[in-house]
Length: 285
Image (cartoon, rainbow, N blue to C red):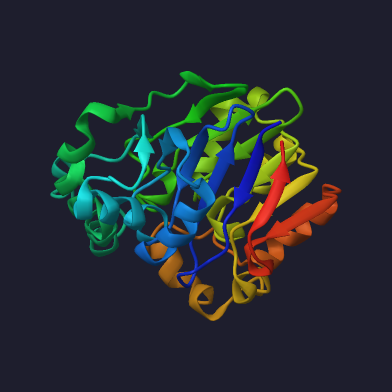
């Protein structure tokens, strides 16, 4: 039986998963920041990493991976393949036809230049994911349901998140990365019939995330929250989301705190919540 490890935060918040298959191989999802790498290495335990999936180019998700590649080309990991699909920095950096170019440029510059600078170090291992393709790692089947859609610019990097469904002989887990409302709408329209899953990784740490329609299509029994205490207990409208006019200018009006998402999960009858604030979570698959 496969086992999922949802690693707790060493840095202030992040997302890091390790899945160990029944043949003792690993799948990593994101990994967090450089500060989170010792815990990740401990969870991997020297095992072969069949797939390292990078959901999107934000610091709290992939800067640890990027740092490891810059440091020693990932020599501390027995890595077979890296899966990702990121926006093209060069193609987008001069595109001013966006709701908020200052924010858009900040998004592009947060991690993409650093990531692009180390790509040559794992070039033979990279695989650019195409929406609809699938891979198998031992008994774990992974189907990619959503990849970067050019034109979703108001919430650029979060809405470029890979979404994939992981299925084992016993259960299914849907990983939503940091997908936001607009990306969630596209996911719902294009892949609604494939969304139902027993377990869901809450999009964008549970706040400013996909709509209730998406979660209602998933109908999870278990929710995975990559959230420290302050985020898991966040109100529906925290201070940084209180300026509705600013959000409208940025094209990001449908942004709310975790309190709203938690109410949705209550309405859907979710039975169990695993939260990284409570430490590393171990879940049999």
